[in-house]
Length: 98
Image 1 (cartoon, rainbow, N blue to C red):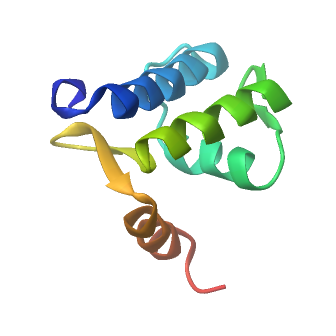
Image 2 (cartoon, helix red, strand yellow):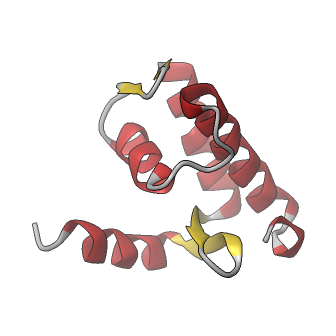
Image 3 (cartoon, rainbow, N blue to C red):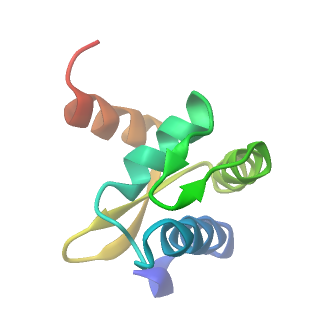
């Protein structure tokens, strides 16, 4: 939940949510964390109604670096912070072996 996050973590969660609003008019679209991670680590792309820009990707990366992790949406706890190592593990579970 946002209330449980530190300020840098909350900044990342709120920015991710704002991108979801621009793309789908939804506070947190299902799979948002994976789509934005793809944009942040590969290249910007069209996400819903939003053409992600290099500036938006840079801001995602900066906010992630500042808090030392990533945000994902947990069904019970809502916006949840994980370290980058934990996120990499979740990402592997989501995408399967490479």
